[in-house]
Length: 169
Image (tube, one colour):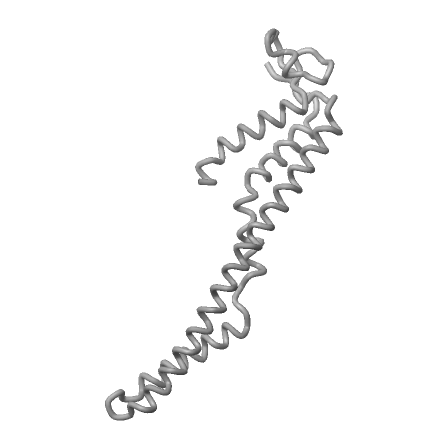
């Protein structure tokens, strides 16, 4: 029913199409490495926790001035942390978008160059006559009943994206 003519290209294009489909999932861990909380943000957060512990030991009724002073410091640090976090999140979104686009373009470029490079190489040969589809499946290869690189990439890409749809959604 099916004869594999070029196993390397078969696996190579399946791998590239899989990477192309998984780019949205791969971007998040890559960006997470670069967009963590800064040292200043972590130290401010530790200071807030220390101040809250000190504030718990102060009676609000008896020492209102000291309690209020600590509360103002806590509020100031929390607002700085919130500000830093929102700017980090907006930068993170920009980085995610940029990395996503760069990876998609890179994988697409590799696929397009590979398809052009191996355009005349048949990937698999089908036994039997597929009369109406023979020319479409084998173009630009000359081998009858073969599946060309172009068609293999289209079929692989569609199949992999369909199979991975539950994971990607």
